[in-house]
Image (cartoon, rainbow, N blue to C red; front, side):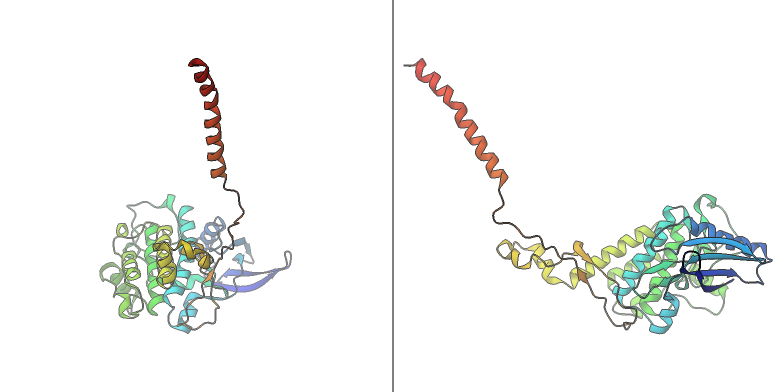
Length: 347
């Protein structure tokens, strides 16, 4: 419905993305309102994982949006080039996607059009959520509403959206699950020759287990993925924040599994030798840094530990011992008058 140009803001001397509604859609009030809705929804969301909106306007009978320019490619294009992502890469990117979409949920907005094309990936592997064109404010959604016209992408929308029912944050969670499935396997959970058949698949058919296409997927992650692809919204995680927290726990488990030495140190009392491994990272002190955009699909991301260089000072004063010593001195000196009184009493 729009064309996006890379432009230069001469006033602030920066590159921006200029999104212009296509000329053939400009006379249509429905498309114009959808375009305005995108600008309004995204303009109220300030988050590192959401594309920032700078301006909105109307010129020469054309609506336009000025937004943050994101160097890189959309996730769909990268998937077409690479086929699939590794488990670690998928989790790292999906945690960012959940952070952005989760912030929208906390702000009272349902995206309603989560798909790989709407995730932009920078060269340093930062993910940005874009295109709030059909987003809905939670305050305007009535649970009993039903529509004969379904907006969204049939490959990614939730069963309730496919049935024309009211969307919810759990609907975005389902779509995030479809994107995660696509990243891990290189294909969508459902394929069909028509939008109607795709909608039926989302409503009725169980998704094939992703491990069928990628045996490297851990069983825990597969169970989580099948949970978010449940037909009933109540069976999924309620918000993207909850889904992201679960993925973060899986990420930490994967770290522990690939760092058995640290797990062993956590379980055993090795105090005589603890100084030798004081700089070994623990899962809670590990930063999963982004990998280079050009790595192959089989590559694993590099994990950079944040090292704690705090050393114990052997000459440091043990204040607890000093306190106990003073207390003992006071106790003894307090008994001296008592002893003198007893001595003179029985003398």
